[in-house]
Amino acid sequence: MNKIEFLEALKARLKALPEEDRDRFIDEYSEKIDAFMEDGMSEEDAVASIGDPGDVALKILVENEELVPKKENSKPLATTAYYKGEANDNRSSENNNRRRSQSGSYDSHDDNRRYEKKSGNTALKVILIIICFPFIIAAAATAFGLFIGACGLLFGLLVGACGIAVGFVGAGIGSIVGLITCILSGKVAFGLVTLGAGFILAGIGLLIFPVVKAMATFSVKVIKGMFTAVARLFRGRTA
Image (cartoon, rainbow, N blue to C red; front, side, top):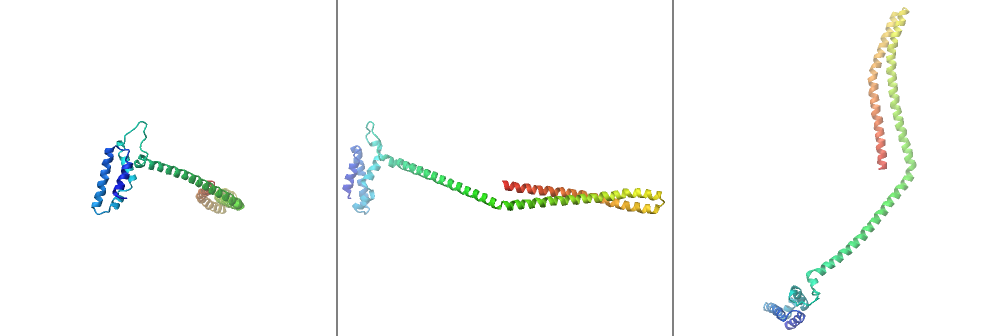
């Protein structure tokens, strides 16, 4: 396209403008083409660098819309929305709506997949519990038996130690009665020996009582610790 063809096409597309404004823009673009040609460009290249006459006219009309004579109930130029970005905004809004719709479908699909996965995990857990139930019962019974046995052992040791201590103290008290009996029967020396032995046993019995107390405290701590461990185990299973 040469210069004359370009200017004629541009003028035809600017017919909405008043004649003096139209001629002003024609002269302006004619000077631009001449300036490009003076810089060494060919006429066709200079015209091509300006752009398509339709696009140039469109830009002029939008940027100078106030120059277009208004009529009653006239609508804005149909192309104004394009250059002001409204069409792009509408297109962007449509794309956003489409993305939100797709995102919603994706979220719904992901929710379904998560629900299916959770249901599958729940079913697997139920199956494993059914299969392992006999072993769980056996392990629980064994643990309970060990717990009861440990409690019984501690209690037996405690009662035994307490019985020994009481027996030794009782022997010391009994030696006093033996001494009196020996004196009445004329066996004073034997009575004194019996009294000495009784006091020794009573002393040992009194020494055993702190040990019994320590054993009782230790037994209470052990039993309490076992109860706490079992309670934590069951809480972890049911959480």
